[in-house]
Length: 196
Image 1 (cartoon, rainbow, N blue to C red):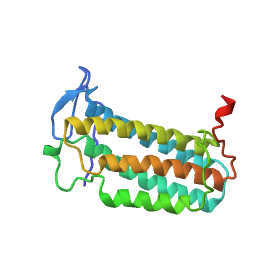
Image 2 (image 1 turned 90 degrees about the horizontal axis):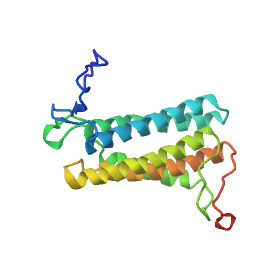
Image 3 (image 1 turned 45 degrees about the vertical axis):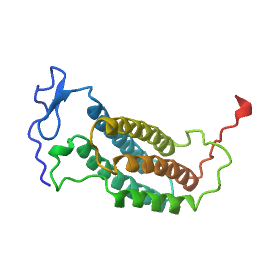
Image 4 (image 1 turned 120 degrees about the vertical axis):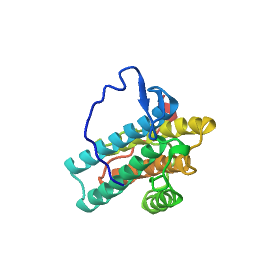
């Protein structure tokens, strides 16, 4: 797939409208735009997590593994964003989309990483070091993206694996945040209701 970006601004959106892939014009606050905009927001937070991962101390092997996983997810999120920006009737056959193999990969990684972690006896309070905190933030934005895509799927056709992918991704980010905290020796703060 060849991508060429020759202009950054077009002035075409100054009236509050934008074009989907395929040329259909919609309002900038349309639900489809909100969906892929939130996926883009999630991708940006993962970029922050990768930057923090490179710039904060930790075991080199764990940092490299984390970076590789997040880079893969960032690419998959670009595919998902492109898919969400394209109405089903305008989607070319070669366009990358979220597929079952992507969902299965996340499930396998959740199981692999979770096997290294102690069993939870309460909810985890978001926090920890910078990387862990960004992963928790990414998890919550991923859940918001999932909710938005569920709403969109009630109104329009979306790819079959878009919602399952976002669902597994939020679980993956939760487990990854715990795994990262453990590998970096960060204390895991748990919810204690009696302190409320």
